[in-house]
Length: 320
Figure 1 (cartoon, rainbow, N blue to C red):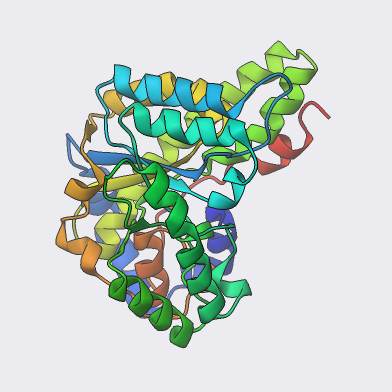
Figure 2 (cartoon, helix red, strand yellow):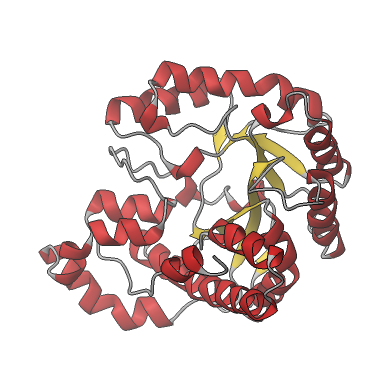
């Protein structure tokens, strides 16, 4: 789900506000927005393994997985979770090799459902069947490591409260933990544009993609932390959502430098989600889903900090 779509739905609240939301925005604006922790904590996670985004001509999934995992290892980031859609593994030696490489390089895998449906588009029973169908592949490829972490596709947890509660009960009964997200800058929205520009050898356009990607990341790393302060009254250890795409793999060294410049320290997903904030369940029907702070702000009708939407129009037209 794109953050700007969610924001559009909340424009009346941000502009006019409930009494509670408006007062919070006025009273806490400076204190919440500018007094951020000097050394925030983050766990990196990657969705859509083993086949995130379109494959560029001449490239392979195995190459992307090896490059991505190799960069993580070079920065001493072992045990990073990638969330798997096992449908991509069927009858495809390249994706199978990619997932083996990811795990062999010391990374972990969790569940992203078998075929990446939105829970909003299927029944609770069908969604649970998607989770169960993913398990044989996770067992086969995880090399004995803990794969019972679950990431909802599109960060959507159900358009009805009944469905949300049913799926959460299923996950709990089957030993899963929900891999919630606090930081998300829609990194995968740059991938299609990158493929077009690379095919046309438009170096100036690729340079703009790199610049805008990092600018968007820098903004939403801060915005996400501000959202936490509104939602929880404090910053919490973070989980950053990324995707296993060709462009994010290309940009990972620069992104890691950005995180270092902003003072981030890295921890594992399990370490981060020990924080009690991750036990908070908004327990509301939220069709658009979103990060954990997004869900809390929406369910409690709290105002968002200001932000500039990603350059979606240019991303959709560049290199056409």
